[in-house]
Image (cartoon, rainbow, N blue to C red; front, side):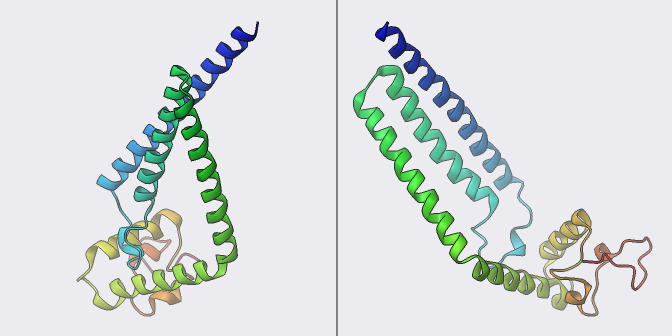
Length: 179
């Protein structure tokens, strides 16, 4: 009876870790795909390496490695691998808790930082006109997709309001997206 319960637990842990491994590999693959076809990197120039693609690659790698360790430890019933697996899970939970606390404590500072950085990236297409086409294209895509204009509203663009801010074709003054 106890042997069958242990086998059930073993194969359940293998199945759960296999599913986690597949999810981690999918996240890793999607992150790599985004890195290859990435847009919107120019909107936050200060933190160009802090983007969703890099975050997904790192997260996918961590999940894939840890879940493989758990799968192999459960399948081989290796005590050392299982202890390593649970220690890594514990460290991962502590890291998540720490990051959540830091983000909660510094939420307003982070908001102000991103707002300032977005406003700085908005100045590039506004002041340089055609020199930074990637930045301009990224802003046009975001504004068309989300039906918005600038960081706060149309006044962020001053006198150089792009056509992507307009909600009518052809673009007429005062027919801009409200936010």
